Picture 1 (cartoon, rainbow, N blue to C red):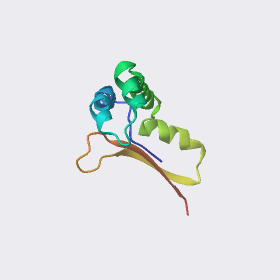
Picture 2 (picture 1 turned 90 degrees about the vertical axis):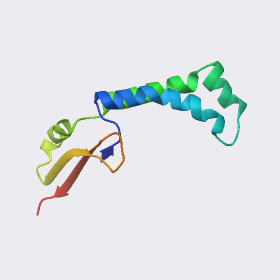
Picture 3 (picture 1 turned 30 degrees about the vertical axis):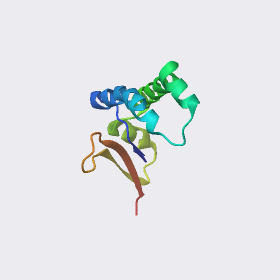
Picture 4 (picture 1 turned 180 degrees about the vertical axis):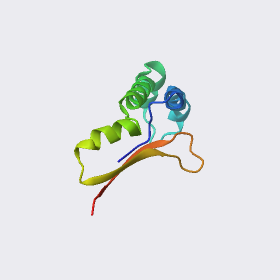
Length: 102
């Protein structure tokens, strides 16, 4: 299991910028739709949905410690949880790996 968002200040700050990206990138999206322009600029529904989705995703993401606590009822597995950061990425992803014990 892996999550791109994390419950950190950096992730929340990044999610707050997503509506700006929606405003900037909407005219470049293909195929062209008038409804997309209407829902982005005249009635800013799309930027608000993007903001809501990002904030809720940050709130619901669990920390590695919380994931390990949730898996304590499964002793037949070796569990490993942590943060992974790829090269050139701004946010660290939360991961959980379970391997059957031998």
